[in-house]
Length: 215
Image (tube, rainbow, N blue to C red; front, side, top):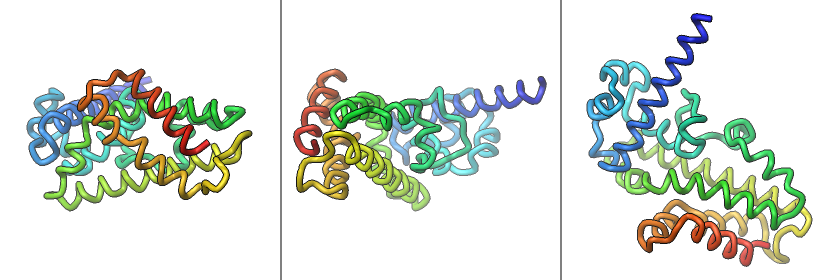
């Protein structure tokens, strides 16, 4: 069907532009990346880039969202990181996490798949923190953090209602705070890039630390 074929081509082009932007944001930071450079990297006309995303901040939002979901799963034009009610649809593993029978198994699954997300988002940390010169980009980063808080709170709420539950005296709010601080792209970046830890070692560390603090 011609319309389906056009839609598939448009999605492929969108993903190519978002992936190119992600690479440049990681390499050059947000302020050091231009729309022209992204267009060259993606092999599209700069007019196509502006027509699709309108602003660099909007493109940045899609790059962050695609890093969370996975570039092959990004379908746009959702823009900013996904809201909690979209998690089951956008994250293929979320329903399996929710259906895990106990807290230990669920946490292990959450960390395993969450490290994949951190691995993709971590290279964007510099760009996220270096976007202060653009108010629209700051809004993207702030909304991204709000969505991270919401999704971690949803994950902790799921853990709290499974067999085993949270540690006595640890509330959902406190557990969410602990997870936000410890299970972050910044910590992953410090361990993986800063200290040369392997992905597997990072995953074991996060699982052990979060289990000791939360379960």
